[in-house]
Image (cartoon, rainbow, N blue to C red):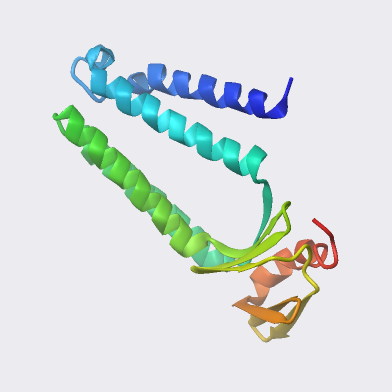
Length: 196
C-alpha cells in the first residue's frame, strides 16, 4: 500500500476514535452522551482532525525533513513539565464551562497557544529538507538553498559550548550547555558533507 495513503488512513482512523471515545474520557456535557447530538461537536471535530491529518501528511510525505535540535536539556525539561501541568489545569477549567461553543473555541485557542509556546521555547536547531533547503531555527528562521552543511564545530568553554555551523559562506551559531552539546555532538557531526 502507498505510504501516503497508509498515513492518511491511520490519521483518519485515529481521528474517528478520538471523536467517538474522547467524551468518555473527559465528559464535556452532562449527560456525557448528549455531546454526540451536537452538530458543532462534529463540525469542529472533523475540521480539527482534517487539519491535523493534512499537517501530518505534509510534514511526513509531501515535504519531508530532518530536524536536529540545539537545546539546553535541563531548562527544556523543566519547561515541558510545567507547561504540561498548566495545560492539564486549563483543560480542567475549560471542561467546567457549560456553553459548548465557548468550550470548543477556548480549547482551540489553548491548543494554539500551547503549540506557539512549544515553538518559542523548543524549536531551536537545524532543519534539512530533502528538496535542497536548509533552515536554521532560532525563533527567527533563516533559509539557505543548499544540499549540505559544510562544517559543524563544537567549541567547549567550561559549562558552555558554542556550536558553529557553516553553510557555504554563511555561519550560524548556537550557545548551549556543555552537557546538552555532548548529547547531540555525534548525531550532528554525522550530517556534515551528507547530501540530502
